[in-house]
Each structure stands twice: as C-alpha cells, then as structure tokens.
Length: 376
Image 1 (cartoon, one colour):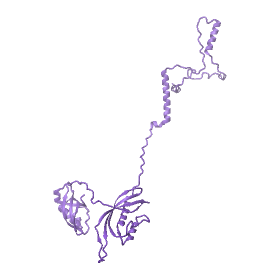
Image 2 (spheres, one colour):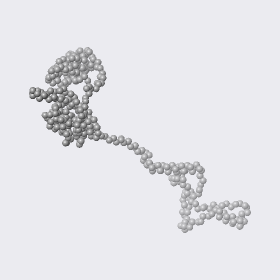
Image 3 (cartoon, helix red, strand yellow):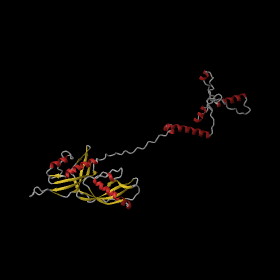
Image 4 (cartoon, helix red, strand yellow):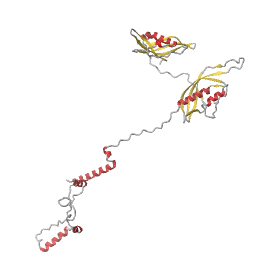
C-alpha cells in the first residue's frame, strides 16, 4: 500500500478510477482534438428507450424479455462504493483526532510537550522597610542637654546658655525656663530608653544624679561655704527630632519620677558545695587575694594564667568565706567573699574564682587560674 493511499484513507478521500486501477488518466493517449471536444454523456434511460423502440420495430422483442439498461459511463472520474457504518465512524474519528492534535500543537507549542516550562518562583511580597531611628545619637544629645539643663549656677549664666545652644535649634530660648537663680551640680548622667513618637520625633529618658547647693547666708562669716544637700537621682524626658541626619532638642523637657526599688530578680539555681575541696583549697585562695591587693599575682596563679593586680590604695582585710562548687576534673569553680579596706571603710565583695590542679613530679597543688567579680 502506497503513502498516497494511506493519506487518502486517513483524510477520507475516495480512490480515483483509471487504467488498471492505478489512477492514470485513461484519456492520456487521446489526440488533442478529442480532448478539446469531449463526448456528450449518454443518458441511460434515453438509450434504453431507443433500444426498445428499435427492437419493437424489427420484431426482436417478442420473447418478452426486458432490455438491460445501457452501462455507458456517465463521465464521472470515480465510482461510488458502499461502506459500512463502522468504517465511516472510524474514518471520522481519525480525522477528528488529527485535527485535534494539530490545533493543540498550535496553541501550546510542540516544545512544551517534551520540555515543560519551569514554574516561576513566587515573588516575595515587597515589604517597605523603615530606616531605624538613630537611638545612640539621640541618647548622646539628650545626655549632653540634661547635664547642661540640670546644672545651673547664677554666677555662670552665659556658660549654661552656651552649652544648651550646642544642642538646640538656631534662635531657640537658651534659658529653657530658668530664672537665673540658685545652684545645682550634676554628678552623673545616664541616658535610657528612646521612644519614637511620630515622623522623626522621639522622647529620650535620661536619669541624672544631682546635688542642690544652698547659698550661704550673707551674715557674719562671708567665708562660710555653701551647704550641700543630699544627692538624688531625677528623671528627665527630653524631646528630640532627627533633622538632616542629626539630632536636635526640639523643646523644653519634663522632670519624671524614678522608682525607689528595682524589679524583682529572677530565681537563681542553688549551687551545691564540695566541703572537702573547699577546706583543701581555702589556703590557696586566701594567699591569692593577699597578693591580689599587694600588686603581685604571678607567684600565686597557675601557669598560663593572667590576672592583673588591684590598684594601689586597696588593703586586703581577709577571706570571709570560700566554697568550691561540686564537680569533677582538674579545673573547678567556687565563690569567695572578701573584705577590703578602701577609703577609710571596710567593704565585703563577692568573687567567682576558678582554680586548677597543678602537678609536679612528687606532688600536686591547687592554684587560682581566673577571677571574676560578682556572684554570676
């Protein structure tokens, strides 16, 4: 079966008729004149009537037989053939499938059948990030302002105004509500939380340790020194704003109270004590703290340790208590309570001390390897 026959079967085209069923034109050898004047097609009914009249006239139709109709070709290039309904259905189904594939290929593309396109990764939603407020710069400016604002001296009015002008906008009121009388010293300033309010504005909490100074009575003794009151902590809320990348104080502050007590401390786990090791190492720890105050710790610390000595003016009074924590190994930690003499007073302080076992050819001993202040 040839390729043309297969194509005609799929597309549902009829087979052409010709010489030997090959589809060749039977009139190929007819002269050009015959091609130009094709014969008139014969009507089978007219030829049958003509034969009947001729037979009747000659008397050949007496036998009663009916003449057969002429089978002269009607001039069509093919002859219709009956087909079963199943063949027609299959042909139409095949034709429909072919057209479906063609249309699908045109819509989706042939390449997508074999190499599916990669699904695009979902884009993360765009989040507009706001620039962080310059808290450190705000704290620094607020601390400078608080020191100048809370420290006043009626004999140094211009000095205070110059210090305030450095952190205020141009043409601002540098008196900031002060009437120009009295004296107060600022001993310490500690900036705290920065609370952003709106736009580029914020509020900075500053805590200051101040000591008011009462003036001497203009009485008999002009050489009398002013009486100093007790120092106290005060809180100050300072309004600031960011302008052109810098922080400026935008107005007068307000005094606020400070809690009398700190918050409750979290519960700490209880440390178990090793009584035997505490007794065994008590002398080594006592010797270390004596050298710690004397300024020479190299002889009482373990090899490789580096513990700077205390400054001059600190006198060692004694080891109040020492307890080594339970554990194992050649390096252990314990808590020491030490009494010092400083500034004419005695104070007791807590240290966390790390000791290590140092071995020699004939014995071993414990020496201090590190020391940290506080109980944590």
